[in-house]
Length: 376
Image 1 (tube, rainbow, N blue to C red):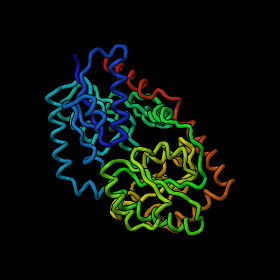
Image 2: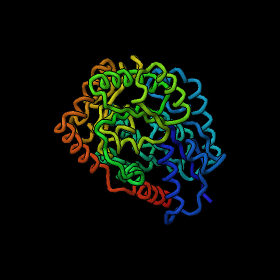
Image 3: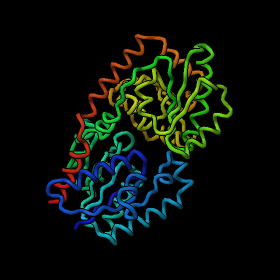
Image 4: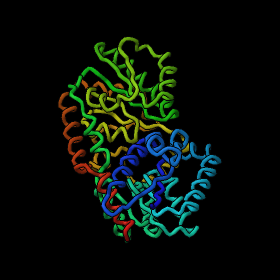
């Protein structure tokens, strides 16, 4: 039996990783495998004590937030490195989470680890430091890309690269529901992290009040990521005057994306999911000033939303930092809800972006590529 060690640091990565390992266990040529690692509730629930559920602590955004938890990350890094070196697995699979995972791959090679290192959901270094790609080629054995344009970028460095499509295609197709869009329903998607929700939800609620003042028939629904986020939501809603016009539910984000006529969505995975379902929306992004200042210096692309990056144009409006105001959000929402031509054009563009995500089966394709890599 061969051991495989996987590291995922976010909730979305945890879901993708669980599907990947299920597919890998049935791949031709993979043999009998035993899985270990760090992940979230999906992996821990499936593989028990061999997986540590650390995503609640590990999923932080931005430079300043990481600095505040530097000691904790340093300890986790050392523990993880030691675990892998003691286990000596046949392969290490790194799922997204580049700040931690790329350093881990480098440290493993420096410590003499000779097993395979495979990266699933390629890190978006093309946005901030393409110069890292040749360095990655020296320490990784396989890169699995979710966007087609990424393949050439990595392959040019000599790194074995496969485009498998985006794993969310299959997952989101399975979550389709038979529900019509309600053009008087606005969705609020303030994110899955506590700091993010505390930053974005108040401005979304203020914008909702402004929309309601001019469109009294408008309804609002908030997508809540978890029980811990629900506590924050209830706290912030006490100050809101939305009353009977407002509802909130845990774990209903994908249904809401198919039902709402428009939405405000935090930058991240949810913004691409919203695009997949063709929900018109505005993207909202706010982080600490230090994190934002550093990002402005290093990010080399004109957009932060993946929908806009893939389309190479502004499909959905991006309200970043000082522009993320209630006035701006309310004005854009009125346009989405009331301007039929504007809304339909956006939905057409979103459909075009959806076609760029591949035809499904990403986990199975990625798993087979990893199995083939193990055989070499």
